[in-house]
Image (cartoon, rainbow, N blue to C red):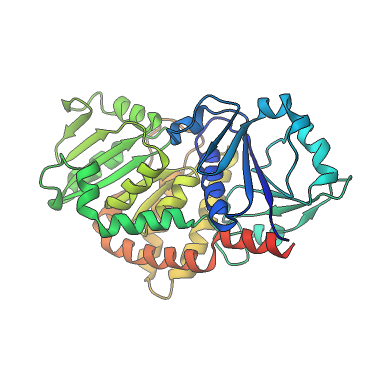
Length: 387
């Protein structure tokens, strides 16, 4: 298929992850299909405005040659808006009926872009078709994952170029984000982005660590968690930062998508949450920890197990069993919870911080494998062109 038109639909619920993925995919597909018309349809704009300061309160607007349209505008003007050849339905969202009524007979391909998963079953489900029961439109499932047989991960060129730029101009980006950290070369600096979490074990273990550590706390849930658990500690307060022994905690204001990507490529380690931030952290090649979204009956731990299995398979010829066992235990302990709250966990952080260089060496191997073999954008391009 020679792609001329592409529409992406995203229904934002209560977080930045969905729009973060869709925004990233749209930008990259515009680079790949630069002569194609690409539109993104969103149920609301609040979260999009947070991650891109160019967004305004308008039913229809163009940003970087991509048209962004609200569901309300679509419904009000459905008779004047044609459908596209290819439709991407992000995360099984409900596309407005006014659009689908036309698309069944006038569009060719509907791709259901699912959430990232590391579980084995997605390889069999990837690119399977699903009958729609009417018209010529065909639907296929696209399953992102960490293997060559899955849909891969979003290793977009915009991000990779940004990471390379940070690596080659470290002083420039230090001046931009970390200029007021004294004696920074003798300190460990990392980001902390989580759901509700009791970080007392982290604070206690970092006091035993042989270096000073600066934690850059991102997001309301992370910052609120830290404030609540530290209220009984002997903390020194400095405007938007706290000092406790060897540890300095800085509360950062919201960063847009580009700023966040620059920061995580600049620091020494990243603790992240959700899907989009996790993949960004994986692609830094730096040490990371993933706070996965909590699900009933510990279903989220199955996803952790799946990821660790894929990670082990890629690096096991380079890493020893002690390393792999310690990292797997850390991932599982960090995420062992029935719900997101401030219940005290059992994880230990010392092995992680004492082996940052080793972790980065192996994480870089895993990152390079994903970029070369599991690039979602490349896989999506090939599937569309072959259809």
